[in-house]
Amino acid sequence: MYYDFFGFTEPPFSIAPDPRYLYLSERHKEALAHLMYGVQGQGGFIVITGEVGTGKTTVSRCFIENAPLHVDIALVLNPRLSARELLSAICDELEIVHPAGASIKQLVDLINRDLLKAHAAGRHKVLIIDEAQNLSADVLEQLRLLTNLETAEKKLLQIVLLGQPELQQMLALPKLRQLNQRVTARYHLHAIGGNELPAYLSYRLGVAGMRGEVFSPAAIRKLYRLSNGIPRLINLISDRALLGAYAENEHEVRPAHIRQAAKEVGGSSNSGPKTARVGRRRNLPGVLLLGASLLLAMVSALWLYQQWSGSEAIARTTTGAGSEDLASLQTQAGDAPVEQSGTIQRERESDIESPANTALKSPPFSFAKQALNVSDAFRELFGIWGVEYNPQAFPIACDFARASGFGCLEREGSRRSLTFLDRPAMLMLQDDAGNQGYVVLRELDGDSAQIILPEGPVQVSFSSLEPFWFGGYRLLWQLPDYVLSQAGTGDAAGEEIWIGARMMELADSHGESTAESARIKRLSAKEQVRWYQALRGLTVDGIAGAMTVIQINNDLKANVPRLAGAKSGEKG
Image (cartoon, rainbow, N blue to C red; front, side, top):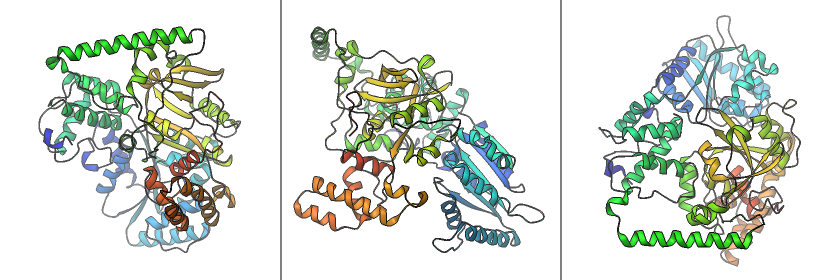
């Protein structure tokens, strides 16, 4: 949209892990050096950790492109697998032919045979696992056993684990001490420094085909303060800021553009870039109209206060987003595209920011007093679902969740993501000093948010949470029965039955005609899922994953905890 206006040949701030756009800050150089050094060693584990959005995946892509010629790399992107499924995925990546349904022993034998063959040919095999914090302790132990494959001189497999800081906590567990002792190189990737940000921006702009400065010095300082130096947030905010400058026909990005862009990326109800410097072209009728609107809002606020005095009056809005805005926001933030519901109306700014609501909004959030640690946050989240969670007995919360019949969904998105998923969620927060904490969001109604603390529910304004929240959230979702069957390995026949039963209802309620409904019911289970995903604006892959199942349950009013209607006790 704005590429020609600024002279770009391609988007300069895409969040895709394109190695061409990897600006090698001192920290990124050190992380890459650890990878390069590690593969020259004698096998074992290399661990690279970092907060969400710091560039771990991009560093790994750069390493893959620049790895030594004798190195063969297998890359696993989705580690939420059982031990057998992970070994099968490794075989696929290493192009090892294996029978369907092979046992763990058969798969290990095949991998061992391939590694010996590669060693004889002078090749070195490296396995990279992204998002490794999602690995269970049992799967990590199976990976350790893979590094037992060795000759008299060296181990045959190098394993690189890329993950969030929780990975280090997992490796510190007593049951994984043997694996932890086999880590030959480890590095924690921090955010880039403020003094590096101008060079980072210039580098990405240059790769996109532009020479010259676009961001004013004040805008760069504001960008660093709002992003905390996290590359993904820098990219998201910069992309929106460029769009805002383009909308105003200005070739320089200023602090006002950065501030507005950060609000949009952070899930503000603002629907798009606003004209921040219209003072030069301000006209009297417009000013009078604005003044009249404010006066009317103030009178309305006074009337509402009188009507609701003495009661718990909180202005309510119907939150949501138009399909294009919702898909765009969540895709850019790393979230899968989600459903476009015809019953959800676009969130209106006047409902959130009017003086009437300002007078009646909930009290602000206090990070120092109300933020939780991760264990307490998980305990409160499980409590909402009626499950008692003991962090001491189950250090890995998501393993406990699956054993209790739930899935863990960890994403980055916006306020609209939360509203659309309509589930209680843990929000990851960070203050200006870099301190991190969590809050469990139980209810979201307009600007009124109910959070759960150990002493009970507390009402705060959602707008007071937003300065600390950069999009990271976790939530629980009810696993379908077929996922829980056969010791958690899944059941293809059960999945088809589960999907078929629900698609019968959905076809009747969403089919445009009786004939269309009948056609949908005749489709295979996979094609029915594809139909539903297309209807709801989800990724059309025919796989009933977390986002699809959650939306199916929303459509069919499943009896689960919801953000909407929580105060009145509704669960369906």
